[in-house]
Length: 467
Ligand SMILES: CC(C)[C@H](C(=O)O)[C@@H](O)C(=O)O
Ligand code: SF4
Image 1 (cartoon, rainbow, N blue to C red):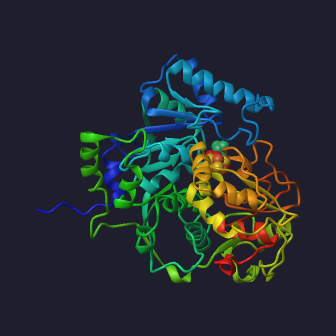
Image 2 (image 1 turned 120 degrees about the horizontal axis):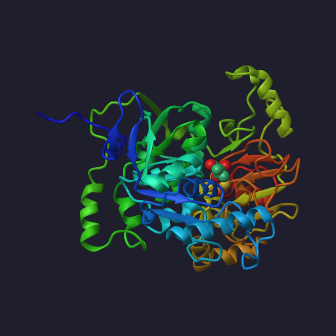
């Protein structure tokens, strides 16, 4: 008798269930655990209070990213709260023997950038972190999701958590993407169609030509944004692109171990006929470069379009108007031509080498608009090095940009990189909530190409004009 076809998600999930609780959540084994300075201190305090240790310190990896300055990282951190969180991370990891890539460490960077680039994130794994954008690691065919601080403590002490199994959604995007349409645009397009709650309760698998033809960097961008449509996480079946990306990375398996794991990874795909709770299909040709005009990532549109009228949308008119009011925009406004004050390229969404290559492809031979303040922030030191090795640094410098040091930076403005009140920032990050990039700041989410076009013109500009 043939086996019942199963989904990629089921294959990975089921192989990690340690115990099933009747009518309750599954007890679930965690292969990899990432921690950062913001959500781990209370978890370690909990361990102290309960007198428990860390069960598998070699399965947890720490990096400092949220609170870190992006200039003068060799100097002591001035903000006392940040300095204390960074110190706690250092003390806690050293006490329990957990590897720690703190400020100045050549492997330091944003948690969701450094995990994959060092070969820690692998197909078929279960990966958690006290951080919502842990969904990024799903790009490798892993089940990866954000957890709360009490769960961080649970994972440290037992390497397990209790999780109810989410429902399954597959999003197929088929066809060929047009000029200037990047993975970020694909993700913003999907969220604009599904809304920020459209995938609540689901774990998403992305499938179809568009994702098969996408680089690992692009797949990470897409999976990163899964959380912004409410999904628990998103994943893409591993393939040759995945294996080539992992091969040779410092902590990736080697030799016989590599061969053994590779054979397993090749089984990680959804079988024909496997059933999903929801199936969604899009056409690649319907997607243009995107930009957001409101205060949640679902309020996005093709850059050449006009801001929708409240009456054309489902949902509350009052909240819609409040959102446009905060942004200083009106219904039916064109986005093209709006003035931009700041440009931020970076974050765990678009802070990888490919993003800087895209940014540089437009900036090359042009100059930064004088009134624009631009923050160019690599996701890690490894990305910073690639920028320098590939000559992107010179392109940026000649165009009047300054390269900063790695960290979350203006993505959530927990350090000094804050957009001033009332100012407009085209940002390659993932959230445009009120005040996200600094009190009163106004965020327009977009791709690195749109960010570059805005940086050189000082206005919202269709990047296709430059390609
Ligand atoms: C600080 C952290 C808890 C938070 C998250 O979970 O996402 C941050 O990374 C963010 O992007 O808002
Ligand atoms: S870059 Fe932004 S979204 Fe990513 S982990 Fe840091 S704060 Fe969160």
